[in-house]
View 1 (spheres, helix red, strand yellow):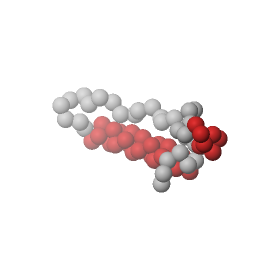
View 2 (cartoon, rainbow, N blue to C red; view 1 turned 180 degrees about the horizontal axis):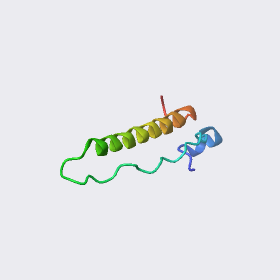
View 3 (cartoon, rainbow, N blue to C red; view 1 turned 30 degrees about the vertical axis):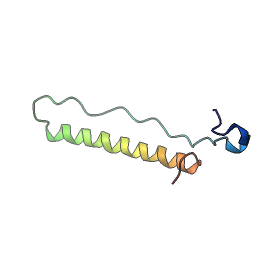
View 4 (cartoon, one colour; view 1 turned 120 degrees about the vertical axis):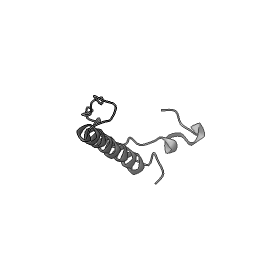
Length: 70
């Protein structure tokens, strides 16, 4: 990783963020008709919420490691 300020040396070297598991496979499918069914909508919403949780975990890991401001 390149330093943002080479004159500062190791003081500018970033810390590694905590590991976050990969996002799971999508469970939603393409809508069969012009209007999605409730089940299709619910599956898509569940995928969105799982991905949202994963993104928030990544942001928290970056903040905890000091790589991103709070």
